[in-house]
Figure (cartoon, rainbow, N blue to C red):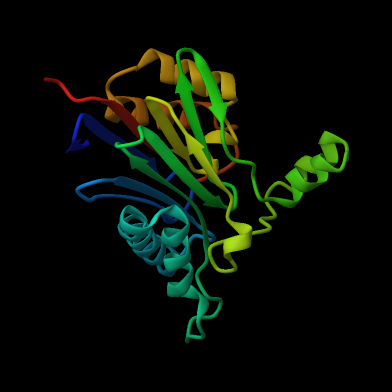
Length: 242
């Protein structure tokens, strides 16, 4: 667990991850704090190779560190700069991701994302999803295509860190005590109701909550199908104890 003390606010961050049935865990998470902010980044590398695994960890660290100082969009764009230029890799490593920056002075969390990582918050017993997957499947749903056909295209990501631009990175402000970032290995096998139930069961312990979410996703993964990498990042914001 990471714990950061800001003026009048304490921010705790818990993370957990599992490789699932893949050859490499190409999910990565990083947390960074300054005197006035705390940032968390979740990166889901595209593919399952040593190169993607290494790159995902690098992207998460850069995104978190830059976001803590310049905001979540800047964090994702800094990650973009690391993999967008020409290089010897073929194919070039790519990823999707989400970044959350807590501004204790405003008691707000600012979120940015590309691809199909998700960000949720829980207020009371109400789970709110703040992101819309940047996938072909989600686009088809928006234009009225039947769910059966839309599901066939949920693995086609329309935006990624590799092609990210300011115009393609949505930003959302959230005021909530708990914020959750998940890779698709979790939210593709757990419903929103299941995620909400786990979050409600562990209101204080961010490390245990992250572990329980990953464990629930492992249990819910379809038999006979290799489970995806799965990662949860939980941020808990509360008034500092006096």
